[in-house]
Length: 211
Length: 204
Image 1 (cartoon, rainbow over the protein chains, first blue to last red):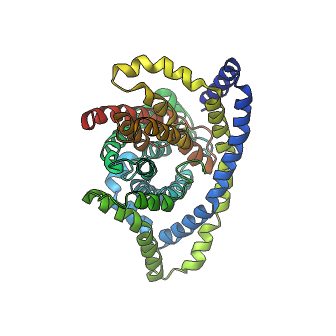
Image 2 (cartoon, helix red, strand yellow):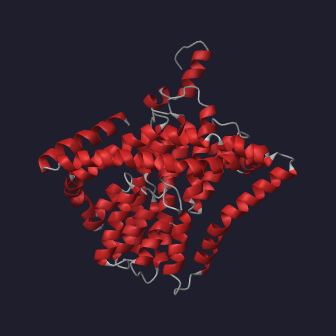
């Protein structure tokens, strides 16, 4: 993230200077800082609502039930998470919300899932393998009804605004498989392995030593 | 508002319903739309009723959970400011034009129209930005042209990777994202290439 952020900043400033767009670049910086706060604060209500509902679902046993239902898949995708952990059920709810195109519910559920995953993290500022796989599922999320783009197509007078559903579902399924496979493969690289917070903590508990 | 996340889903559903009032949906679409409309009410009903059966104090429990909403939203702010400012500056600088020129020979090779390249590059960075580009393309070429259909498929096939990573990791205070961005971008690339491939078969 460090390098990407640095690259975005430097490219913007250098190219902006070459293009004589520096004024626009600074204006954009100020504007987007405001937009970021608006988005975050806009989340408070919907976030509180879903966290409240999820708390009831958790204590009522629904999350545990969901976790049990997908145990085989969960075991493969998230081997580090105990199969009965509420993180599994919460992640499933987030993914279902994504499938249905319920953006307003999907984000709060996803953030709740991150909270559960964080409980299993031994170093609080570094992503675990499970988190990266979960994010891979989310960044390439399969949506059966991409409502936003369908709405734009309809407004522009498309004869069949829905005709892109099948192609989008196909492409996003491939994207999801690719992202998860990539996450699973990259986590085996020596460098990435070394940075796994749970592995580091395990080693320390066992008294160190190279594996 | 800004990203797909912030736009009210209900508004969009209503817009679609109005805009497509004259067209008849296929069975699949009708079923999927029904699911979407019913999903949240059904979830709420099941959760609350099951909570009641299990003798949970539903109101108190709800309040307990909802309390955390504020802190989660506020925790995201610094992460989102960092990434959105960088992306906003990148867009305003005009760097996108250079990237398009650089990559055009490759995309021509796989039969991807150069017009759709900015959409592909913008998609992981900004939801509203890429939607704006898709809308522009459909305005110019028509929503039912190959370019219009391909751009729509591209938009519908992945999420805004950088945004999702900033918000999800930001909410729990994770700064070292390890291989999350690499995996997300590989997914995006696969999604975009497969969008070109499937559109050529279905619409080409």
